[in-house]
Image 1 (cartoon, rainbow, N blue to C red):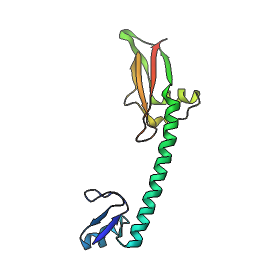
Image 2: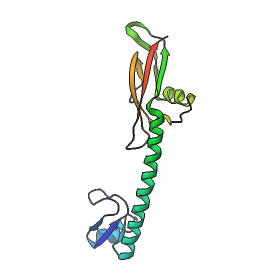
Image 3: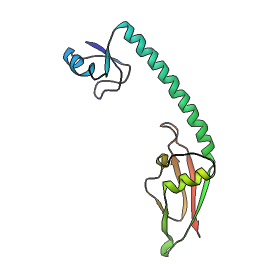
Image 4: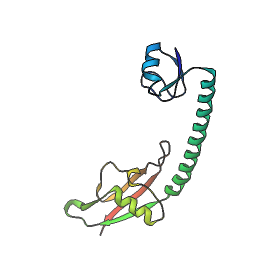
Length: 147
């Protein structure tokens, strides 16, 4: 039986692809779960329309992300912190600290979008990525200096 996938199905195909599967797999799993449509002419036209709509929406989201990335491109944040022996910080600079400092400059960013795998615990300059969009990831410069 030929079906059109509504969603990505592992080991089968991606959204919008026309694939051939066994009748029982389509009838008992894919169709009831809403993962696929039967491959009729009307459904093929509907999937083509949805694919076009989704591509326009993704293009608009990417354009918005690129304008946001342009605003983030020249950002340089400086943090002052107390240090102990061997130039180690008493505290740390976290994603939340970076997010608050960006908001002070008028740039709204969710702290989960700050790509900081672990807090900064030493002096120096660091490049920190901001996850604006899956394809757009600008970096800001974060400097940590002695108090």
